[in-house]
Image (cartoon, rainbow, N blue to C red; front, side, top):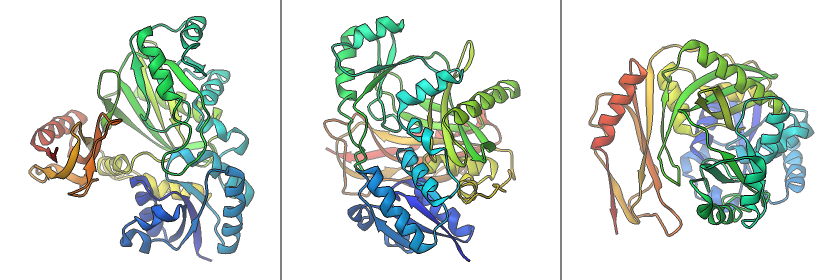
Length: 411
């Protein structure tokens, strides 16, 4: 009998990687999404799918009922996610189906970062001190009671990525930042209901890293460490990643061990996660765990550096199979995102394809589309992936490539 998996959401570059990985493994993929979102997908993407179920995600209980019935009719035996916002729903659905997944009773903490912080603390996992905030007026008192000093990081409790994240240097900025974080009450794409809480988290000093882990039966079968780069200032935007980072083996092993303890504290048993941490003077300290695949561009970067297809490993894990993919090379690759602060009509990217070391490049925006807006400081319009023999060489080549790239936006 042909194997089949249900993918929650198909509107990300990570979802594209998962669908194509499943195809290489001879696994048919059905997707759960919104009708209008599905209609926007390219015909080629839709043709790669075996089925679609249009789902209202605003009620998790009703969504699980509908999707369980659909999976039963279609003979679907695995559940995957396109992003971490679906992790609690996926765990509940997998539990209903008797499919491999994460621990359903702990799954809320894989998305709700306040519950995540509490779980990590209970299990003694080194992690950033975190305070829950329900109003701007009480924020300063809560920070003082917790002994948090500035700078602090303010973020929504359930948004993914860097959406709504601000670094506050003093009390005058705190109230407005908390007020902004409290406005994130629903997922902007799928309408999932979010908890109306903001978080203040201690700002950790040190370089930032992200560990991408594939987990099978509670054990990490694959872990790829990456160096993460962001902008500075109040609003932090991801600017790129480098694989592998320039870390000694002992420190990397220590970080991997701490991350695995964090994944187990959150009940991750079968799937994929990417965990952000900083290397502080006291050692690795976790910031947060995203219980879903990272950006598709990072998955591709890892593949260029190591030959490992983590999307394939993820599909195997949710099917209950031990992931079999193995590294075939020991090079390096650097991913750099192309961001613009301009507002207006996008005309295109120039300067791509000049370097012989450019492994991949992509524009996310079509000419004629509008970019920017009143609430947007930067728009991510594309990326480049550059290879090298070492991380330092890949970084240098990426810097050279980025100096040639220009984003043409007509005001």
